[in-house]
Image (cartoon, rainbow, N blue to C red):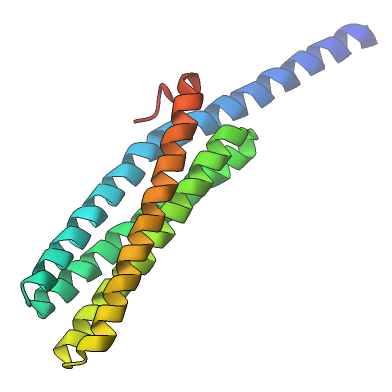
Length: 166
């Protein structure tokens, strides 16, 4: 009788653990489109800010950089939530992917801050300081691109794991 009870308890425990892991993956799959959407919107606002700055419209550049920051912060918050689910599932591929996503977002946040600072320096007629910020913004966006490429390589190496993610 004890053996049957032990086997039944073991099966229930395994079912529960598998269900929790599957639920974590489902949560990641639900959060991924939100992360991507916020990142795309942040990229759009960042590009608009850069274009406005190129056209010497510093006020508009600052407004768009603030919008980009808001979108990137939303992406980061959502990615951090997804990372918790990945850690709970103990899926190293998803953990690495989301770590890289957060690094990419952080680089974009820092680039956006540098772009905003450049616009503020240009408003104050501090052209040299503004140009330094632009150089940093470009370097940080290149860093973000490196993280994105690493994520793409991870997806290409593990296509079966990313079928449900968009």
